[in-house]
Image (tube, rainbow, N blue to C red; front, side, top):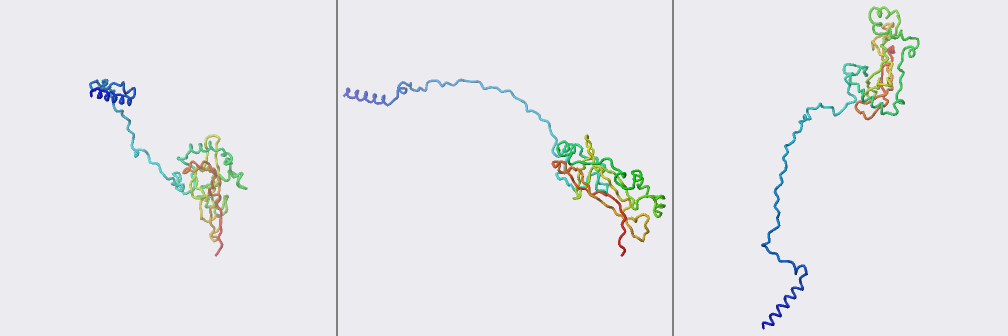
Length: 256
């Protein structure tokens, strides 16, 4: 009986050994009494940094407020106290912007043209420059005017003020204000226009009797000038059209 039991135990052990791999057969059994491999490290110490201090910047309200919308029909500062549609002086003239537009416009010389030296010698038949310059407001005012008004003294029948002007800003025919290219560094770009404005608009013409019901009327003509839009600087330089006073003429209406 003991022999048979020994044979059975030997066969069972052989079958279990066949089911195990070689590595599993020779792997030592885990014993909990083995110490765990846990090396001890001291906790690292990192240097402490103080929080940096940043400069304080002013709030948004501290900066100047710029207009978000530019109205091209709003009169510029130079025209606030003037009834005309142009400015001969302009403290806010955008010199830098206009010069930049000139430098980066390859067609500027094809757009620009001017006759800088103009006078009555070239533009008024029968009148010299010296004569025209003498016909100012003082010539048509006071005792001299009273004496010459009825006797036909020298002068125009409708007194006017003549100027060879170089406007810096002007209102175009669409009612929008533009900057006129004038006298920018070298080469000098000027745009000279002859203007003639009635000294006494709607007044009776000189040397004519009141029974004629004569009246001095202002005449205008259009001029094309190289311009710059301060409300749209990306547009560059372009030609725009302006209405300027050109003459003061005597008109006699039809008698009713």
